[in-house]
Length: 459
Image (cartoon, rainbow, N blue to C red; front, side, top):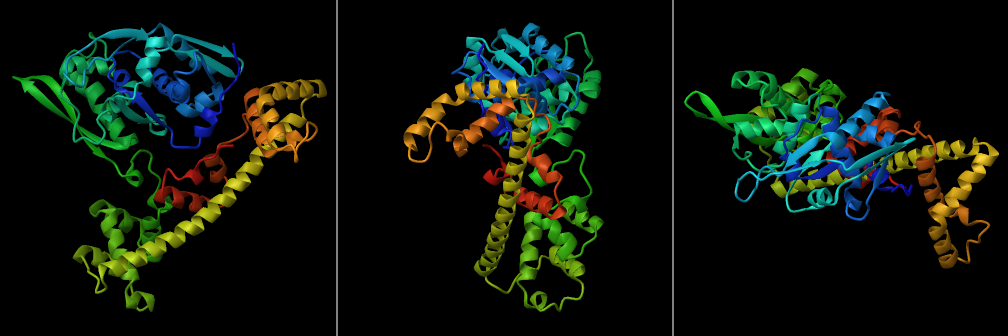
């Protein structure tokens, strides 16, 4: 069994963790637990890029736990969930998007799984691989959002709704089929009002609390019986997501910062303003005020009252729209440039922190163990070593080739795979332990561009 652990999972760890999951496995009838659903999505996310290239995939248990947001140390629960994925039969491809007809196939989600120390090896059947890898139709599932769910029913509903992201609503579903999609056994909650109270209402509440979608159910009745159901869909703005929301004053988006600090609104005033008005509309009024002569000369007595009045009465600027836009663009570009410099410093500090932890872990190995480790590394990196000795022969020799930055990066990757480096935290966790100004800079850039490359870390 090979141990050539890919770096794919580590490179993606700090990026937006989004899985493109085939609609057939979203529209599936099964009785997976919440933990099994999360693990299924995390394993597919980790393996996806090499799904058709490798017969077996590998992930560390540590990585798997991080992907699913599992904080406990009970790895026996992970083992039982993995075992259940082999023995649980999944019915999939229930809905044909072309005809709306129900088709049927059954399979175990994972063909095999093996835990060897800190590593988890797993494989898919050839037919399942083809299904999972097909790009013809998919739903996007955010693994960070998935980790927040507290029930299997809530996560199942999120998966089934995300398939229709960008549309005003899902398709109409027969209630019996919908029960299957939610994983509700035929003999459970047979009366619809019980199903609605114990499954549907709670699941809708979870999706609306933890996810980036806002949904509401619609019903078709025949007489007094509900026979079909669908869901109205609306995207939630990233900074307006619900869940365990911290106090408004803890947010660091440019708009919130201006409301609380520049215009000196109270948290309650800012919260109420954001509930009543669109954030773009508020920002437009802020730009108008900041471009005005009284503001620039410091002649406005109460900035809070002036802004509230400008928003309420829709103040307009005497300056041309093009001039206002230029002012706003210049402010944005200046702030982005400052933030990038701060984030680059943070990344450099994080890189140094990682290197220190890894090299210390190597140095404290017993001499014989360290020698075996380095021999194993040379076998692991032999192809890269040969390439560098050939391409950069004037700079590196067999005696100093390990000093090459490329080989040093490979050494860190190899150490992460082979040594118990559980103390290394992610860049997000690293930032959370830094000074307030560094955390603010990180969150500001994240609010401007959540997918910015500077917010991800890879070797």
